[in-house]
Image (cartoon, rainbow, N blue to C red; front, side, top):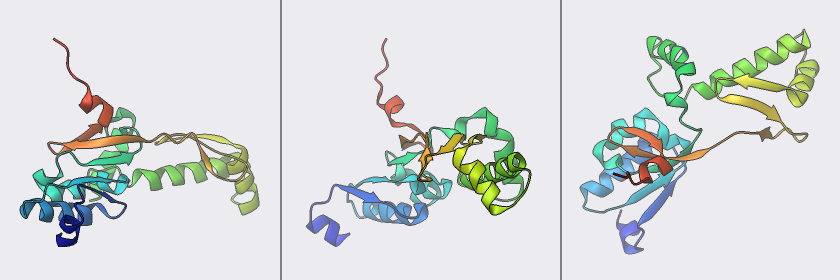
Length: 167
């Protein structure tokens, strides 16, 4: 914290593990250092808020659009909780990868690697994270991201939190 203060750092971007970022933030605020934390989707972990607590208020991070609020994934998330995986959305990426692979195997009619790779390269798939396709270089197409903000133990898209209510 001393080095951050000495260099007058007001905003810290963390691209790491959510609970570690929560510890950095809660420590800074406990020492009276008002630090704005910004980061990647690791800060969207429920464990971030568990560690940061109220210090996490106003933390901004990038993530897939509000998937944790989507009713289509409620059953999957309930199953995760029953298996002790917590209420967050972190496992949904792995779940989507399995959905993608399974659909490509089904379309190929085999689990042969080359045939499945061809299906993945040229196919369009629907997953728990939304539509998935790949460009000729194998890069993901159509993956939407948005900035989220933590408020009172939950998060929502940043632009919705910044909207000024009219009366």
